[in-house]
Amino acid sequence: MTSNPYEAAGFYDTAIASGRHRDIVGGRWEETGRIELAVLKEAGLLPHHHLLDIGAGSLRLGCKAVPYLEAGHYWATDASREILLAGHRCELEDPARLDPRHLVQDAQFAFPGIPEVITHAIAFAVFPHLPLAYLRRALTNLHRFPALERFLFTVFLAPDAAQAAQPYRQADGVVTHDLRPPYHLLEADVHHFAQSCGWRLDRNPVMLPRGQVLFLAEPLRR
Image (cartoon, rainbow, N blue to C red; front, side):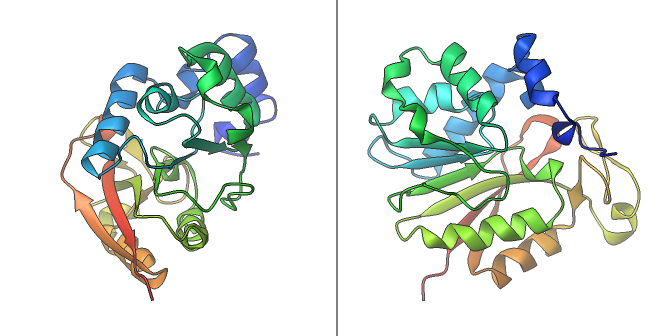
């Protein structure tokens, strides 16, 4: 039995059928989507760039990024392609600007079929739901994109090892854990993973919903 609701049998089908495709990606739909696009722009995203939205859900960011980017420059992955398609059906002002083939099912962070032209990638509110190994896998596999300039991702942090070993209440009220979702990490561990996987990491001071912390990673080119 899983403690992660996203892994429960029928979770996505039930939510989509009941019209809850927005709710299951964390709420605060408009606010969070605006924040995601804003931090990407701050990180240098321009309309001619190519964006990979990892764990994109029902296109909370996509419905804003697709009109901003040149046509064909947005790609999205998620463990469920059906939730991506629900976003395509319900949330895009002009669905013709986004080819459904750009919506890719990918639960393993393997990025199948994503072209090498990607210049920016983001995983917003993805890793708090997954064990730490998924962050390592993403950091490792993103190296296959030679044009990638920046990867933005969010995590929950605990302030020290003692508090990380028990439930920790974040500034926005959500309680995080070390062994079950939503997960928290130590900042030192995030930096260690990034360095060992070939990335230079900066913590962004922006205040995010539910107390998440934003990191900006740049690949270390050999």
